Amino acid sequence: MALRRVMGTRLEKSGFWVWATYRIYYTRTQCFELTPSAHRRAKSALAEHGVALIGEDSDRTFWWTDQGYYWADADLDAEAVELLLWNRQRRQSSQLDRLRKARVNATDVETSRRARIPDDVKVLVWERDDGRCVQCGIEDDLQFDHVIPVAKGGGVTAENIQILCGDCNRAKSASIV
Image (tube, rainbow, N blue to C red):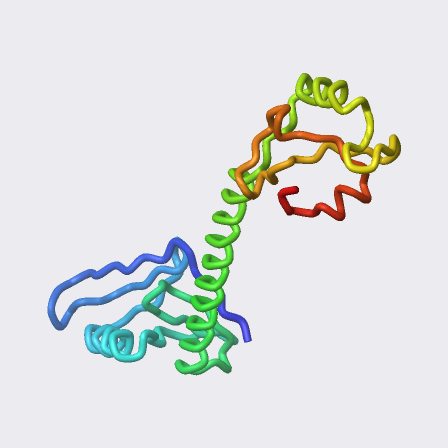
């Protein structure tokens, strides 16, 4: 159940009125020839159903669609070709929606990254807090903590940074204490 787009296809008309001939070239030299009535029927089917059978070549058929020209397996009828094209369009739309969301999320992540605490602020806070947890006085598992969390508008100034041990920091969580 394959449906493959044919790139570089061109439609050429030669002659005029009832003597006109329409050629749909799918390679440089190979084409399907259509009479004016066959061309009108194909255009009518294209307008009505979105697909029109142009011709057959051994085990495959050549289709004219709103989206271009396609080779399909010979066992596919117009409805199957139309459904496969619809499914392809649906998947592409879904993929574009996911990509749009991913781009928005990537932009949000880039803009929401918190500013690093500058080294000079870390040194100042370390000296001010005497290298100990300001809650319990322990000297192990020390972490720099924002007094007012960044999510709530806190900055990276020395006044808003303190040293806490891991246990005190987890207990504080995102609260302002």
